[in-house]
Image 1 (cartoon, rainbow, N blue to C red):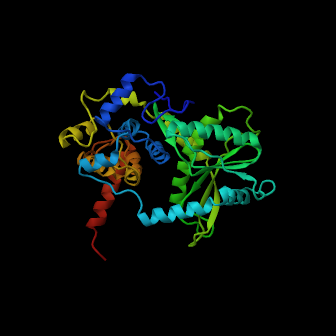
Image 2 (cartoon, one colour):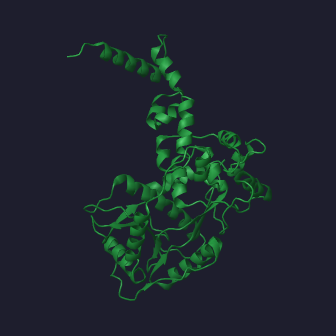
Image 3 (spheres, rainbow, N blue to C red):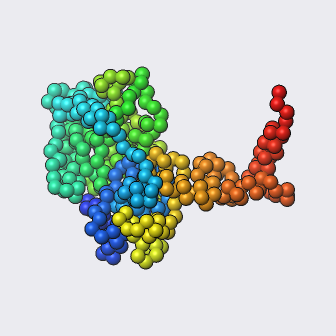
Length: 387
């Protein structure tokens, strides 16, 4: 059952729009008494969309569980985050990019697009987005975007707040910036600290930035659908602006990211996510993910929710080391990577794959045939004399 990208009014974290009181109480019970929910963000949604089959992550993120504290309590912590030096450098670079009320950012965007005359001094607006709480900031952002779109001028919204509903759970998203064009269209801006070397970024890092920007694009589209009179080309532009340091300096350089593929993929993956209440209903009574509880009870609650571990999880999920250890103990072939898993067809365990490679019975299974051929070649190679 899929129901994720509905247009909804902003809601506070941890309170799904239209969700019954029983569900809200159930999610609070899963977090533990007095534990505040951790809101979903674009980075988490991009990682979740990349692995939509992981019911464990969908439930924990949807319920607002602190997976980092959970991993610590399970004895399998994952080191995430950047050094204080990297944070300071990134903040300084972002401040430089957004200098003069966003005029430098608009100049970079105009230079990449090459559309119309360049912005004149003083022609870039910077709306005040100050408000109380995420719900207030989301409403203030919607108002600012509506007013800026109607003004017919350049405008830069610095750290706006957007809302998106995923699998019945709300997410409040905060892009680095959104630029409003004089024609009323919008461009997502991603500011990153990795460098553009000779105008090109590292493919893996640029891909991660594009997936994150695609989440913001979906949230902006949900908001744009509630505004009247969109521009002829649409309200939200499908190309995002990536701003990074140029070569080894601290000078900003920019490149455009085409988000059409990432947007379609991300939306399809988020649509596939099982709703949170359906997963929560399968848990045993009394299941709780409070890191303060006894280790045995915590481990039992975790194992009650199915996981879909893959090596890519190590870069994006705090529970990756725990899930990898369990996958290895169970002999699950998924811990070897998605390519291996897909190549083995119906063989889901390492022992099963090894047994199939040693068999001699007739089979029509292409995966078993390939395994036996590979085993024969390996035996021949190991048995051949060294030269």
